[in-house]
Length: 450
Image (cartoon, rainbow, N blue to C red; front, side, top):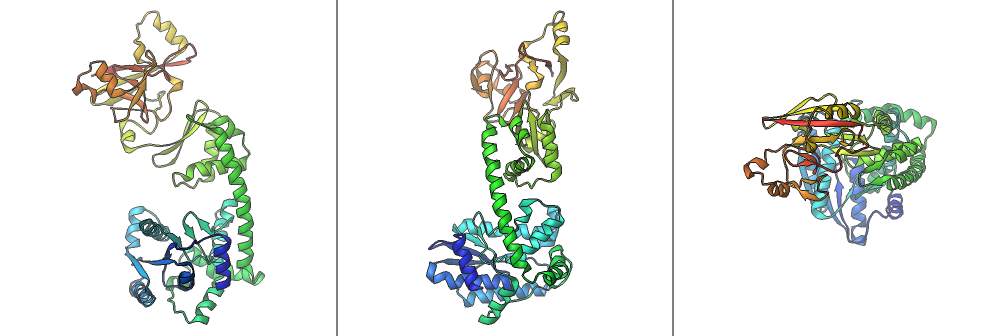
């Protein structure tokens, strides 16, 4: 095992001389093998090793036994230990997630906090056997190439030195060297999805192919090469499509379906979202028109005027009106006891009405140039507007001062804004971006009443 792990370290350049390593130490065979392997490299590579243990408070005395085992092991080996005790069942209820997922998320959050504190890398004890189970699990969920890549040897500052070592080799390594470890009794039951795969599915596959774990590791490696190529092509296409207004919908829409799906995965990864097939299908649909797709609470994919943007809405914006403005459905907005009436007319009707009705230019907007994510609200720090009649960009606060609007009134004035970009300001005017022009097809008429 030690030779395999050593080659894995070198092949993926996991560690450098003098690194600090945070190692997840549950007390089980895999983590203890990793712990002792890193200790064997400590002197040669001048490593600083810090162990992390989480007591999930799920198994009563057995969990306390594991904690005490890890304490003794670290004390004996003179390794600093960081310990977290947390009621995972209670935490899962708060997060409205399974205990399995919450346990995993809490572990990595703890590892990350510790690594950030010490400027360290994180070492986890995933093996080739874990990788095989992960691939099977992803297959049952209908995963594509990305899921078949399994567990990456390196992801950011997370390294997995045992990823090409089987669980059987880990146990033999501990046995040959007299390294003690504890056994989690839940690993011996079929209560969790992965345990069911480990206990019921993998043994059958190993009857067909005794080298199943290693075979899956080789397949995952090939899938990673394919995935990396698709990822590179997708990033190149995104770079071509990127503008200061968003991503050109025409370029995204014309991409091959595999590249398109990967581009969406890349964009959504910034928001910690793993896109489902339905998300990709709906985003594809709105590219050829205007529309919005809710991806997660407060996060939307928005297609408008030929550009795709991923928008994260703030709570304050959400409570002002709605996640996105739907002018055809929304007739009035009330903010600070002010009633803003909204009326939409096609340009022919507007021109006919204009003959007999006097409209205030500052309250007229080109409806089709307003982003779906615009909201009515009061002012915030950083708000700016480029008035159509001035063509000069100014902070809204400064503009209100120039217009001699009383200070006590400025915070009450209603704005239509997309982020910090103000499209219309009550008593000041409309932005050049949304002003009515000869190309306007639909006009939005705003009127304000106290």
